[in-house]
Image (tube, rainbow, N blue to C red; front, side, top):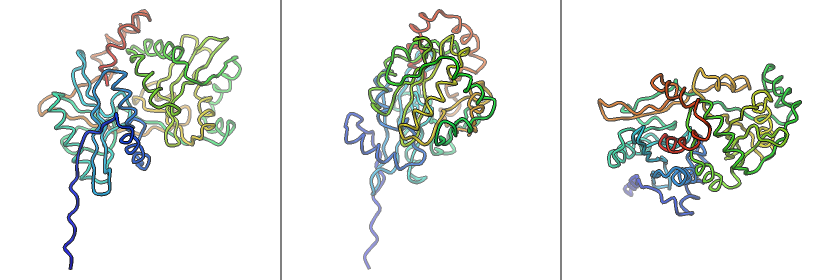
Length: 353
């Protein structure tokens, strides 16, 4: 009898994201993984690295049959918030994707070892496989919201609960024009104003440009205009049959015009026309107005599990703007002139990860 063949040991390496063949190979593997998100794609890591001037470390586990797991990591440096390895950097999803628990364990250990070599005292994994007992888990701060798209506009309206459906119908009477494309200037101006009003710094303009360039036809912007002026806009990603409205916001006139209601309903139609069958409304913090807004659209919250690790006896970094320790900064930021917030915000936000 022949002796059984020895299994090929698992090999871990950092992917070369400059290699088009490497990116394509990883992307093809991700398409087959149920838990994969656009934030796992190599193009996301590359766009973040260029747009925010942070280093990417995309871990790949190789087994006998090829790729067995991945873990995209961004090395984040911030004079205000410290250093961390984050998966996925500047995304709301990420974490370990692996074919089996042993592969997930190997990737988790590799990430922690890499953090030590890079002097990053915190590792943050936004979703993915549980990395093990040494990691803290938070499944209460954030919820995700996703559901299937209906077949047409009328069915989509009926899928929205009655009160919100009425708001969407009212938006149709407000002389709003919808346009899609890549009007980056209009989108950035509206998004920057929106996040300033929430008390948070805006991301660098270069990040949006790099994501649009990297995703190509897999990303676009939908803008709502009233009498020719932009009042709301959203940058969305399209991947594997799902639309991900990611960076969206509105100006001062958006609320009265119900521009956000018009925007997201129009995006549902636009996504169906692009062949999407699912709408991922992204994450929101539990108990916030943003979470209530998504529930009003008929999306049920699903808790998101995030994992962090810090050295024994140390405290992992926390950058949740709802933390009471940031309340004074949030109130002050809301009062900043928009030009000042747009000047200072990118310098701060590129260190958030």
